[in-house]
Image (cartoon, rainbow, N blue to C red; front, side, top):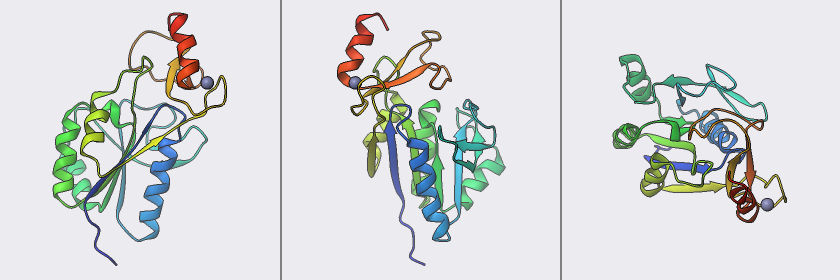
Amino acid sequence: MPTLKAKLVLNVGGMFASKSTALIAQGKRHLLAGHKVLFIKPDIDNRYSDEEIATHDGQKVLSTKISSDCLLNKAEHDSMLDADVILIDEVQFFDKSIVRLLKFLLGSGKVIYCSGLDMDYKGEPFDVTMYLMGIADEVNKLKAVCSDCGDDSYVTVKTSGSNNRVEIGSKDMYQPVCRSCYKKYQEVGQ
Ligand SMILES: [Zn+2]
């Protein structure tokens, strides 16, 4: 089996852009190749399942939750060092300490994939995603379909709920829109 070389691959974009779907597909390729694969998600994300990464269209894989401040217990630390390939979903929910953890894991030879939101609903980049885009070997910018006109989406707007930057929701609360349709939402005060 060829030796894996450390690298960081990012899947970024708005909601409904199939970021988790891409992450699951990337992990499955490594499973088929016989590599040790570990899926991780932050403990804040329990929309669909506590122990699984789930996509909006119902795909699932078993995952380990770690705290968003990346203070790992020994078992979590050992399981990361034991894996060949580490795949992290919803990476924007971690605080900046994830960067140090990922640099350490890359230095230990791990292949790492992360999926995360590039921007919040106001179109402001998430710091962690922005930083990781800078240090990644590959960045895949994924796009959903604009819910108003069908073009490629640019950002996800919030159509209900609070003004909190982080509020867990799905299509009841968020919609993907393209750059020109996004203007209409800004004009009505979104
Ligand atoms: Zn549009």
